Amino acid sequence: MRVLSTTSEYGLLGVRDVDFRLDRYLPSPDLAELVERHWVVTWALPPGRRASVTLLPHPCVNVVLDRGMLAVAGVGRERFTYVYTGEGRVFGTKFRPGAFLPFLGRPVSTITDVTMPAARLWGAPADALAASMTGSVPELIAQTEGFLRARWPEPDPQVAVVGRIVAALLRDREVARVEDIVARFGIPARTLQRLFARYVGVSPKWVLRRYRLHEAAARLAEEQDRPWAEVAAELGYFDQSHFIRDFGAAIGLTPAAYAQACRRREEPVSA
Image 1 (cartoon, helix red, strand yellow):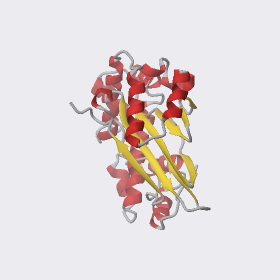
Image 2 (tube, rainbow, N blue to C red):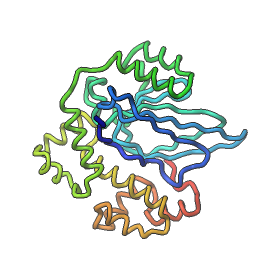
Image 3 (cartoon, one colour):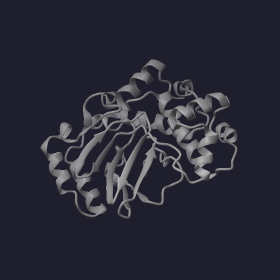
Image 4 (cartoon, rainbow, N blue to C red):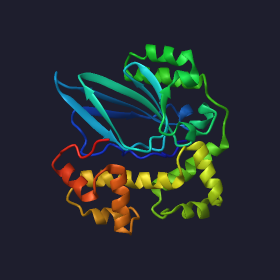
């Protein structure tokens, strides 16, 4: 049975850079309840050239192999810019929102905005895994999945509850406020807040806002001449000043300035 996606395909800001390639891979079916996907970014720049990409993170924990180091990256609340030169790749495994707690064993909020060596969680075997991950992407996926299977946690029914809520925040346009989630799932507001702090690491309001801003930025990058107010209304923002404020805080530009930068194919933002 296919598990419903709980994260968007968005998050890269601006017009997609031709200097890198992003590929996504579904996990093996037996891991899909906790793992959303694997991903790899590759690039090959001529000598002396430097490029960068800015991302607006998802409400997810990632395990990332970068420059031979394996790290656990908690949910990042701020955009960040990755600078790259020469040839290289970054490989990652993205966990579903709320699904990393069984591995972590403590509230995910304790690693929000934190990137730590994977060895801090899994010890020397994590360093050994990183040292061995030099092959093809299918080999990296197989190694990572084997490592996770050997450490697979006991089932936690709350992970599925969080997943259903996050899927509604992602897809359902009738969910415009946290109160809508409270009514739909019959979970008291304070319980919902505690659930998200423990399992996701950020609040349900933050998740809802982030997913809407992901989609807004993607639409403005792809349809650069489309009125931003129309995009805002479609995403449930009926107060334009509220949309401008949220968009500017997350992206660093007003919606109009962002669309203009995308039209000129300029790098519109940096961390």
